[in-house]
Length: 590
Ligand code: FEO
Ligand code: CA
Ligand code: CA
Ligand code: CA
Image (tube, helix red, strand yellow):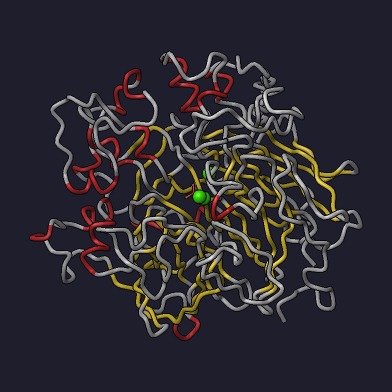
């Protein structure tokens, strides 16, 4: 019953060995091609600037080219047989050393602008022909959304004093989205992009007279905390001058991919966090439930349930559906049960005297609200996916090296390992099979890592499960196969606990049997993140993020030139979308 393909074998492909090779490796009965690399033109009519291998494309060109660091992605068919489609994807962050001809320093206004334009979202048109999937150039659908694209704020925090700035005294409009990591798709056909590590782009001089409050400290928006020097050339990122600007990031952003002129909307009802996933499913009475993670050590898993039912008629009929509803945080109990704890102003712990005068306070400071009601602090929740037939929900907890460290929370039932370097996957079922339920039952699917390492305390669901570390991307295809992508950090790959796990990889799991098989191994230094299997299950799109990234802090030499060069240093490595198909045209993963 787990396979829509009926008699087709599940995980019948030739497994790929763990590999440290600087190459993309897939099963021999499959083939792949490159579709969309950083710097490729998006396809916007009248603007098709070619990628310049020396990174000399300017900021204006970058605004209509593929951004860097491809992440979450979805496939939106444009015709009945799915041979024309929009591919919509996130660009999570930048490698400033690769982005500019002369590297990261010195910073200039033009570099800041190019950096802002290299994040956000791409909407590209693709078509399937005799030569496989190709990008349509130009395309009237093509669009780049980036760090300066005008958008609107919706929901309970819109217009609140916390969102008001000098540029936008009404607190209802904002320029741009960036740090776009995982994603979601609404039942009415819009794309949800998640603003994750937005905090790193805000800063200000360390000696400035700026005293961050508890929420700013919790969200990491403190002066001196910036990763890049945007604030020196773009004043709105200077927290000492515009502290509220950071409150306008960390949201789920709704984009209508079918209308390139539409204004994206940040949906504040869903809560502010380092947003990971906005995975939608329907409740039994036809409302939408959205599952979300917050990828920081000891942060939470959330659920939003809309007030109103989804209406037929696409986005036009559901334009405000995500602005009204109830936000919850998850508590995982030791007996295998769990509860969704309501984050509504006025509930116990969420009153005016606790700092929550309105629902705007609750959603802007969702982490503090979740503390107040007693959510379970998780090991960095990343992607969430819902089984297409059973409604069971799976979430990756990518790792947490600080679990059990002095002064930090110790292991609990849901996050059972101290210094959790391997990461894990939890599965849960909502009570009564209804996504609107306030209770659920949960268990582990995998405690990941290298089982051969002393003390690893791994648990795989079957003896026929390939080992992996740091699960991150997670995607159910329509047949119920679970695609798992890994994100061991660039510094960790091939070392210590990860020595035998090879490069980051993608695996395919059959939750019905617990079998897990490695399907793909990536080039050196990359993360595998973002994937979508087409509705006909014959094409798999996968994003290869930051090939060559040798260390977390971006200081090490790039150890790959994939996909343009064969040896490190021979070309700038480029994040890219890869198209994978079976040579016989069959269903992928079966
Ligand atoms: Fe950008 Fe948490 O992954
Ligand atoms: Ca991720
Ligand atoms: Ca990650
Ligand atoms: Ca990454």
